[in-house]
Image 1 (cartoon, one colour):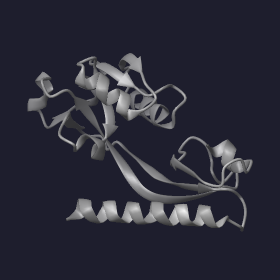
Image 2 (tube, one colour; image 1 turned 135 degrees about the vertical axis):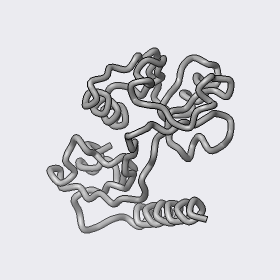
Image 3 (cartoon, one colour; image 1 turned 90 degrees about the vertical axis):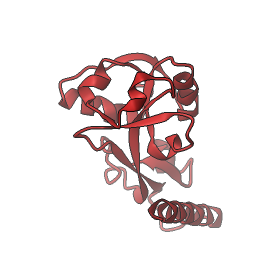
Image 4 (tube, one colour; image 1 turned 30 degrees about the vertical axis):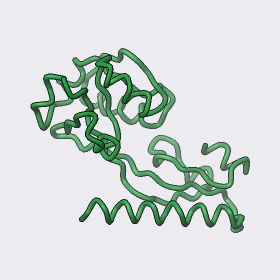
Length: 171
């Protein structure tokens, strides 16, 4: 997405804040919309559903359904495990949270999913002790002073949705 926005193949992108690649170096503009928090997600029948929290060391021993190696979220989690001196037991790699949800529900493993995605009640969320797992989500714009009207409208819709979601969660 960053490459496509920087070469004007895309007018705007929605991305996790690139911790490991510099938006400034590519002269792109990043605008934070919200912070996405991740939780460990298990199926409803899993023995861990009785727990509210778990250590990262315990997670490393579980069969983990994970994001692909080149995804930002995967690199983020790889860094967290590496900083803790842990190597997770990855049993499957999937591109999107919907597919991960299905595999968790089929009891194929556990996964880190966005906290708001797990609030639908179908799966059980467990927070990670002593570790805040979160990434900023935002819009990235090309290095230009002009944005097409459709891009401006899309960005405004994203801002409104992020603000509405923030208000709903705080109530």
